[in-house]
Structures are given as structure tokens and as C-alpha cells.
Image (cartoon, rainbow, N blue to C red; front, side):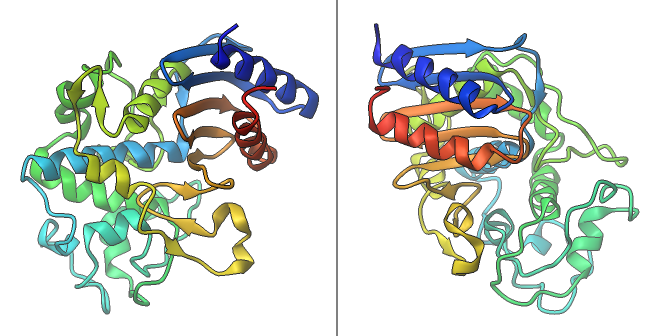
Length: 292
């Protein structure tokens, strides 16, 4: 039995022991892969894991010379009057959640204002302070859209077609722009391909999709938060959370996980927000133990 299968079998047992409401688990370790599905592999919202896809999209655009992440976001959205101390907020700050602009998530945030990005940038910044908000990623992608047009259409031949992800649905705001930091619907197997691309440093089956620097930026140059946040959410990079232990992860609401540890990436889709952190810890322990 392959190491990947051993790890899958152990994670299936753990999920069932813990009552973790998983849809599927996929393990890629080295060149071996294995998976298990509790339900049909339908496309489901990957929630904040989509923030990692947004970083890939902006990285591809930067590779093509279309966008500079260290330029102020207002350079790409010049018609949006900035709030106090917002003029220096860059696209990188938006992706790293360090804009210092406060606009908390709500179920109605996309409809509370005529234009969420305009509202976000009109608010004051408190400097390089961590402020996690879907509005931040949404605004970064509005900057990208200003130079490439419709992002899913532009991204199709650059990312989705090479990974054999056919026209994924990405929910849109009332103005027609993608939600960006969520609302991307993928099958577990499709999400696992994105995980493989990231694990392999931006290369897919011998073809470079995005420069290594953007993949590395997902899990380096961490922004350190205070100890009161707890170890699972203490360090954040461009879409990636540090941990558990020496691993790192893309983490979406309700238990959507891409966990990277050495030569392994574990993809989990689920409907279990409460137990997701514990599941991530048990994934890393299982990888460290080789599935035993």
C-alpha cells in the first residue's frame, strides 16, 4: 500500500472518530496520490481558499508586467477617493491583510454599499495593522480587473485550462465583479490540482504557470500577530496561514483546507467550521507519522 493511501486511510478514520463532517480528502505525497469521498465530488464554495487563487492570479499578471503589487491600489482605481492614510496602501498590503482598513465581514457586505471597493478605500487606515477582511481581497482583485478585464475569463487559459478545471463558477457581486475572497466553486479533485501547483512551486506537469516568488510569498515574510490570536492564526502571509507546526495552509470557512507539509499536500473539503482547526492539526501529525 502506498504512503498516500496509508495517510488517506488514517485521515478517514480520524474524521469519523472525531465526527468531522468532511466531504472528501485527497492526499498527494511525492508522486503518489489517493483520495476518499464521503459524498459526490460536486463543486462547492472553497471560501477563503479562493484568496490563494487570487494571489496566483495577481502573480501571473505581475509576471506579465501588467500589475505591480507594490504600487498603491489607488493607482489602479484612480476614481476612488481614498480615506485618511489610504494613499500608501498597496496591492500587497491588501493581499497580506495589512491595509489597516476596517470593514468586517457580514452576509450582506456585497450589497450594503453601492460599491464595496469604493466604500473600503474611503475608510481610514490605521497603518500596517492586520485587518482580515474579504473586502481587502475583493478590492485587490478590482485593481487586477482594471488591467485585465474579467478575471475568470482572463485567467482561464493561464491557470484553469492547464489544470483541466473547466469554467469554474465564481460568484459575483451585484456590480458583476467576482467576490474574490470566496465564492469560487471547485470539486475536491480540482482544488487538489491547485494544491499540487502550489506544492510544486508554480509548475504544473513541467509547465511554469506562475513564478516561484508568488508561491513562496504565500508562506514567507509572515506578518506576526499578537499571541492572543492563538497559534493557528498568529502568522499570515499572502493568503497563507502558518501552522500547524512546520506546515502551512490555505484555510477556508467550514473546513476547506489545503495543508502543505514537506512533499505532501492534503486537500480537505467539509462542512464543519468548529472542528477544522483540530482536523488540520491531526493532518500534520498524520503526515509526520507517515500515516501510522
